[in-house]
Length: 611
Image 1 (cartoon, rainbow, N blue to C red):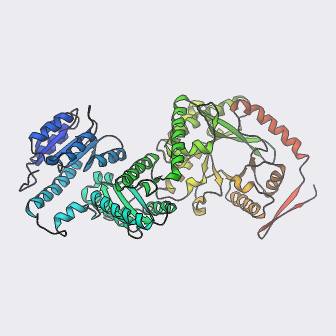
Image 2 (image 1 turned 90 degrees about the horizontal axis):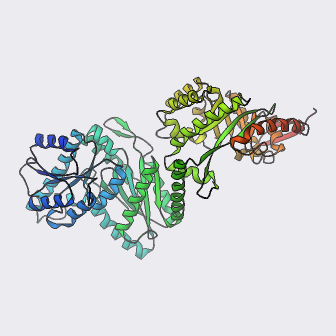
Image 3 (image 1 turned 30 degrees about the vertical axis):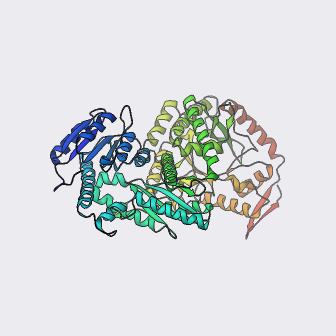
């Protein structure tokens, strides 16, 4: 690029296979009094760059033939055009483009469809920076390291953080010190996910303020001789010495914690989620470039899992990652081939032995035809963002089975479906439930949703009012709502009293050791009392023997669920099981003694009383 007396009359090269972006770009170029050149592929673009002084390349990420990333890398490796800035136009995941684009040398990104105002701010910013850089190269060659030129070369102009080149050099120096002293280094790539969106909506100035706020918070997490840098846009990078590899995760969690509170920008509170990828020296790699690349790749994987996730590239986790990827492949295949099934486990009324509900439990067959354990495939399914899709299928299937139960003489038996927080936040959830009920021709009272207590834990994006409104609307349809696994999620009791619920299910970890463990028994009794005082039915999960049944019965529990009555089963076995459970309950009453449960301090007393 040759220096100019103004930022007008610049030459911009647009490289794209089609013409979808040309009108908005041409309108901008004409308004700004620039010159626009066109290229359709790799060879065409290089020929134009060889013959024309170009000030900026707008590069579509989806070229036919040799890729746009290869073109950008060639530009960076060709001496006389290596300083030309490149803005990539993409229509896919920003994180994927960020990873490959950063490696190829992209300066900035614009998403399709191109917004004219966004294009203007991005192009002006890039041209301005390159203009001053070139001006300084021509006129300030003799300046010392404190000159403005030196700062432009070493630091991100928006945040003042080290740019990627400076960061890499500093990390290389730290690696040399760590090699001699024998300590480790944690490297993290951190995606502040909303920065680019804020720039598109609010403009460059507000996005710059937000980026500086993120940089300040991240800097506060660095301990010892560490550094924060900015790669591009919303992507930050950091390293810090750690005594040993097992200190990597605490460092990651400190960085993630900085995003818990909203950022205040020009008086507005803006919530920003994070995607963090981490690697560690020397376990993962010995070079700065490789460690940074591993961290950015891990950040991309974290972004695909959802908001506020992290991925660690460490030897201790590599086997887990491989296993997770293998199971993830099975999950996608099971979705396509409909290998997911629902099995059903009855809930039994403690006073009369009637089956009041059955919990629908997701099961998945692997490639070998055997069932994959739920604790293996469910976390992978949720991390892959598939639970909402699976949830819709489960709700529709549960409604169909509720109709079959009704038609087989069990109209009062509800089917309970487990929900995740992601499903609750899905904007069409209420409509999908209503449509599933209508399609199956069942009433709402034949359906129940079980919400894990962890979904009620206050989070940055937790909206109590929205949750209360949704649950109120569900109950208006007649659908029952239960808190599942209560006692393990540390939900706020203050929130709990505001949330409309019908049932509370005590987690089986509190049931397993009753009545032998006085503390477990005391907790169970307290939960039963609290639930009933809040007007909820109380269900004990994981009941396996008559001793537990007897204790819970006299502690005032309403319903039981567990292997004492039945294991989860295919729907075809359910009708016969309901009849069997009722008959077994009648026989069991003859063998149960009558007891009284008394709480005394931290202990639980169980005494026989006359029948």
